[in-house]
Each structure stands twice: as structure tokens, then as C-alpha cells.
Image 1 (cartoon, helix red, strand yellow):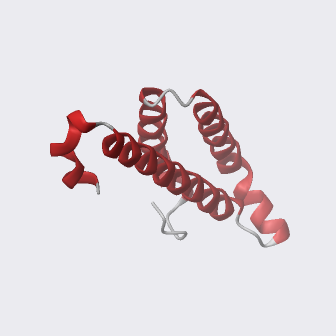
Image 2 (tube, rainbow, N blue to C red; image 1 turned 180 degrees about the vertical axis):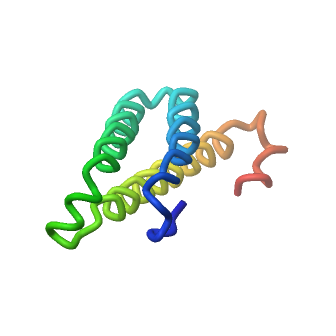
Length: 103
């Protein structure tokens, strides 16, 4: 869903990515991050309502900016989660067989 030319009505598919992100963060017990993703999801909804009128007046697509922000936040969270997971596996000798999957 990174195509900025996708119609605004196709942005409903973002719900899947946001829901999966929230679920993964809840399993990691990252409550602060869950709150931020929920806020970004709500902002995405409100931006989708006003982006067409705003673009006609100001010439800037707010939805594009919102999608970039949401994607960057998800990538930062993914990078943090993989570092945490990799660190836990490397520190726990019981999981030595799983290290090759993540390292």
C-alpha cells in the first residue's frame, strides 16, 4: 500500500496492517507503542476524510504524508523488535538452536 497513486478508497486495506502491528506490539508488551499506532490509525482515518478537499485547495496530499509516517513508524518498530528478539535469543542458551533463524 505504498503506492501514493492508490485511490483514497483503497486505504481501507491499511486496517489489516495496523491491526497486525497492534497485535504484534501487544505480544511484546509494548503498550506505549500500541497507543501510538492506535493514534496513527485514527489520524489515518481522519486524514482520509479531509485529504481530497485539502489537496484541491493547497495542492498537497495529506494521505501521502500520513502513509509515509505510518510506514516509517512500522519500520522503526520492526527494527526494534528484531533487535530485542535477537538479543533475547543470543543471551538465552536454551534457544541456541533458534539463533540461526534470526542472527
